Length: 380
Image (cartoon, rainbow, N blue to C red; front, top):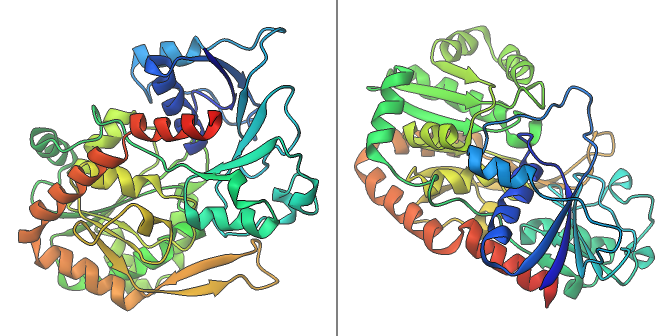
């Protein structure tokens, strides 16, 4: 029996917690791994444990994960600490620090006090969900053989097409006859909410049935305030046009509620600037929703033209005065408007595109499949 220690968060609606818990649920089923879990401290006092994201049975399994006994010596330790990777030598075996470097560079605060990877012990490797993100650790100086790319996944029992659930969700939201664009995330600058709202303002001028649903994460971030700030930056006319067609919700959703929301959309739109992976794009595709997302970034690694329209983008680099450092992509606003209008006016192809996306994700990127890849990286 292989021994694994996972260090991270659980029972909060943060992406790192979602990933850690999804892997743990798969590991508990059929991987012959003796599993222990250490809860890392939350970053903010306002964060609270939240029930209902997973099923009651799944949450009982997650809550039941034991802390390591004094004599438990793991062969692998997977440490999932956002923005502050743990590069310290493990007590036993190897440490695998999980990280998502959205801007492809490790800023000083992301290096855990180290100047370069030369100071990282040989018993420490990285796990990251995309080749885009992996470049940051290469630039830091970590050998490629110690950087393992393991993508995220979906639960096919929950995140899948369901016509009846789609119709019910649209009816409940009062969107039965609308064309619904959806975007999910923290609403931070790297997600591109300013680009999306500017594009939607132009769409709404000529497409009366268009609606935009923004799903924020108010339990973790000031998402609603960030959307308001972006709206304030629009012209008075554009702001009025968007506000009349915009729906915002920042509540914490269960996995099933999120799947229902995704299915209710006609088009999932993500004009991001920088992402480590972008899990909502994958989940939307799995639900049979055609996707519009920035081209050139990590979503290129798990989307195909058969179900995703890619926004033209230009590579850019943060200015020295910016709060962040590193690379990002600037999506082309005019092209985004063109693709959003195309999605609305060419609805006949939506069924075909949706089916292609759902089939691709179900075949390649379930949590079960990607956990197999994680186990191979941890114990090979």
